[in-house]
Length: 446
Figure 1 (cartoon, rainbow, N blue to C red):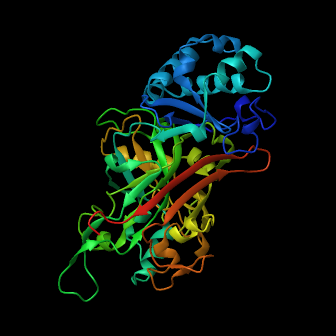
Figure 2 (figure 1 turned 30 degrees about the vertical axis):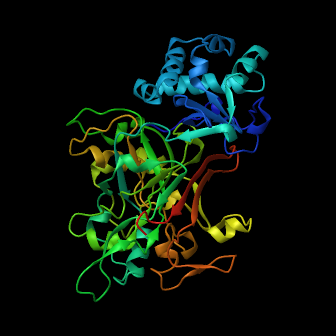
Figure 3 (figure 1 turned 180 degrees about the vertical axis):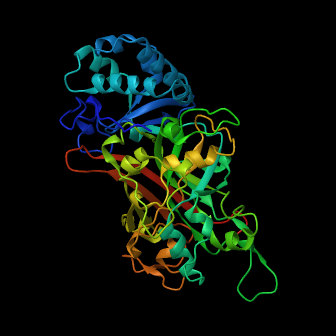
């Protein structure tokens, strides 16, 4: 696990010839990947890169390889990477980190303000306004696993449901996870309130019907970029080379269904109805300026050797600011913007991304390019940093009051949730993850 190195693509003075890139979530120092087609069309989905308010069609560019040499990049690896990305982002992922870097440098040089006029013209012809693009999941996800790695979230939920904030002993020794459902992952989802069984306190039997305790979970998505062979665990030294990048993730949760069903096997119907992703993957290379030391409080057990490394302690953490906003149907009808209801940072997680990859493979599980690992809810040490409404509203005992005068204990039909993420620090250009949005619809049988 070598230290991330800054290079010309992180130059804080670099500017793009595309004016909308300046001050946006997607400056030239970001260049995240996604899949899109023109809105209203029946075109096949294709891979693109966000720059400013545009999406750059890599399929279009891969058919015109001359832009690479004109931009000052004339390597077989960059050409191969561009062609692979033009076909399927998973193809680029599988070529490996050197290819990811080669294409990033090529795109950076072609978008930089000193790029040759013919290069600018070629790229402009391959751009579609994001407002005119229909976005899909950034890759076709094969497998999805959701982790549980925030100590603050675990304790907050425990306090809210009356168990005194107790955390199971295994939480301190390994990143805990369960296998989720990839088929219900999506972007810009309008999801129906799920149906299921729930058991009220003191009741003699469960009731069936729409969930009454629908919640969101502020998480991040880890996108696996490299396959590992079945039966071959990924060691800590190689873990980050397996990760292509990260995005935002909302693991919608029906708490009443979840708490009744989860003993002894864990989440099922309370989670599998929907999981929302943001449309963009911000690469690990783009995140290099925002690395932090990974630290563990002295009163907690230190990681076992297979989950530890000197390099991990040096730069295993990530400084990513995250927020949750809520817009009710009433707010929307009255033209009121979504209201931010919490703000936190990914640096508070008890386990980091490389440890999640190692733990996932230690028994021999074979991860594949395009697989998604959810980080688990991201909550911080203060009440305002809660990553789920069950924490903010104390399991419904202390409803939150919105600017519209409405109150929420859990989500109601018509509520829309928007997650946002940004990285910023002195000496670096701010980069963003875009938005992860979803709206709650009534139950299909409600």
